[in-house]
Image (cartoon, rainbow, N blue to C red; front, side, top):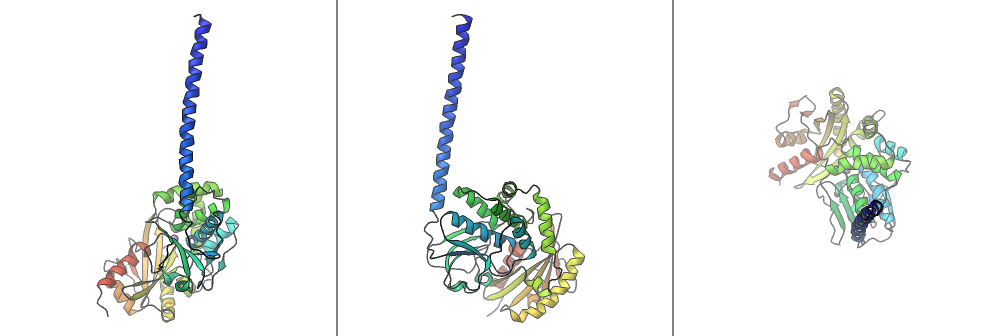
Length: 369
Ligand SMILES: [Mn+2]
């Protein structure tokens, strides 16, 4: 063999190795893609047994927040992509923060659903009749997508029921778009991003998980949002803008009712920028609670005014009356301070993580008829 021939053989060997290697890689890749597509198809098929009749109304809780509204919209869109007739709805007008997200996303505000009775309903972000639209007990529930505890909504037939211990319902929906192999359009990405940022307090909330942390940059890219932190700052300012809002409107802007061991209680969340504003808002909530208590069918009522600073959370809890106050003190004797209006918890008393579970536990041991 001369030099030229040797070089040719060497080149041929190299070429064969390269081609062979790539053919192998392509086969492996093709197999992986096929397996992924099969899995996505199976995931899509897994909800096909939904017993929906007519339009499926996708709806979140009363006193709608951004997660509830945007999740309803993104899930209705996903169901539509799968061929269902689905429409997002709301229980009450949206708050300032949600209004901003909808405007920026270029999305129409969903219609208000006055009465759910007799309709096919897919619940998002709650599973509690006390938090649901009117007539929900007579509705045909086809599914629940949530990140809270199991509520009172119940049904005998098969439903889609997916609840996960993560930061927002919007994150579950982002995961489902991936699991189902569906593209997320810019508008839906913006809605989901706003919802995740809002519900996790920009990924600082105690219920935040790795899934939420991964959702934010992925959705931001799809939504064309360069700086999610800056977007959150705007959302936070919108959420705190109570200017021109009546005290009772503030109390009910993020208000939820619960029932435990036969006792009904309601908790309204209010956000404040600093402690001075929190103390002022607590005073205003004391009046609003006194005015509103008799209008709601509850045994206990509270306002929780929260301040969030550098990942730290301080909550000012304002009871509506003497009975609510007594139960609060008994259930949470470790409060840090009482300022004459509010019981102050300097390490936070999160509604979902501590307040509701703590009250529920206490009411279970509390002697009552
Ligand atoms: Mn939520």
